[in-house]
Amino acid sequence: GPDPERAIPLFQELEFDKLLSQLPGGVAVPLKGKSFEIVTKDALPNFIKTLASLPAFAIDTETDSLDPLTCGLVGISVSWEEGRGYFLPFGVQSDTEVNLPKGETLDLLRPILENAEIKKCGLNLKYDLG
Image (cartoon, rainbow, N blue to C red; front, side, top):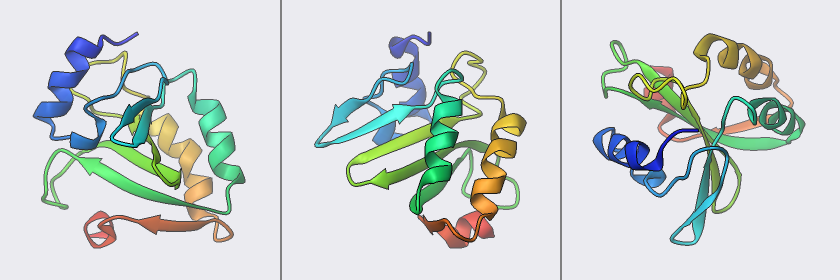
């Protein structure tokens, strides 16, 4: 799996402050009373199944720029319980071991995101929808 010694400096460079104490491979790590988990390729099917079964969740996109017209999507953060979050990485530099297949993952998320029965709450939605 990905090397935490490589991931931590990368998250610092990309300013993923909330993910700095992550261990890859789907292992949750406490971060000041909170935990975050990097969703791996192996964990993705169960993550999608769980997400599809929820009545509501919060979502945020992570990009490589603040300009919504030129930025690239590097990941999606999701949470449905207080103090616990999940990160789906797409563009964490060129580390293919960490990155999920972007198109395939978005195709799996699309029916969930388009399902009006599942409530979604977003962080900075004006930016994400811009």
